[in-house]
Image (cartoon, rainbow, N blue to C red; front, side, top):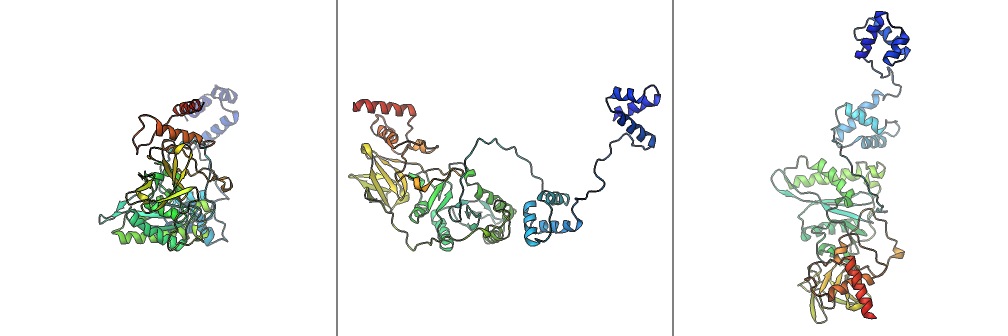
Length: 454
């Protein structure tokens, strides 16, 4: 701005031509003529920048559309621009509504948008993808973080959704125990049928640090033919669909919390109806989850069937102490399987694998010690396994490896030798603590085994 004033002062001296001023100030001749014309016009702010906005915008949103957009936002205060657009298109499909970005600008101008600070996203390192392809292929369950109502009572909401349709199956305030949670699942199974699998975290009452990560609740799921899918520890992103629903649930029902638990449960019930039947979902093409949901054709049996094992297994019933009788010894397996039937199959080199339904619990070595397996971690974005190529014999690997990504052995020989080394190595670790076998140590065991056989 100061250079403009100085250029016009030099022009008024009469010592410079237009060409000389343009070269001296690095502008075109047209610019010199433009500013001299504005100076001669006599305006007080001739040197200030003028607005470049068009005087007329033919694409401006009609005034008649502004009121319905603002009205929907005031009615559903938790709807964003995309959901407002989807709701209006379903309610008045004959009207050509503006884009979601334009609706966002309209709501922001009306003061109906709360600004949210931006967070820098981490750089992606590559990922594979796997998702449920049909309703009831996988359910997701978790406890939303507990809070207190106005009367000081602790509130623990248990939530249950369908991974494919995002249908909110149940929200129930209950204690985080097997005895309190099982009736909630029984009612859900009785009303909606049985899913193929349930995705959950590793904490109680769903998972445990015991053999196979099972609790009495997840063992009951297995008897019903429902496979528990445990996510990696401290990785809620592998249950991200469910956690995203929790954010909406928290925003719409707990701020502020209700006066008591009965009122809070009423809010949850109303939210469940709204979430399933009214609220458009972005991942579903801005349609409600109820449009994609259907109950499972598998009913809840009156009595879960006993596990079946083939002729290669010897069956044992777990005693009240969590032990089984094997070769004249009492071997502790798991207290979560008290009263259940497990199958024990012989492997090479004197090892015996213990299974419950289709879950490998661990191995019994030659000394009669039970080495438990950690559960398989079902990451959210792994490619689905082809059932036609699925091996009938489970991969066996040490517990220390199971807590990370399991190595894909070409056969079970490597794992069997590793377990045999644990059984015969002097100074082996005490039972109950997971052994750590390095790759170098395993290779040395292979060399000793090959040399001894010669």
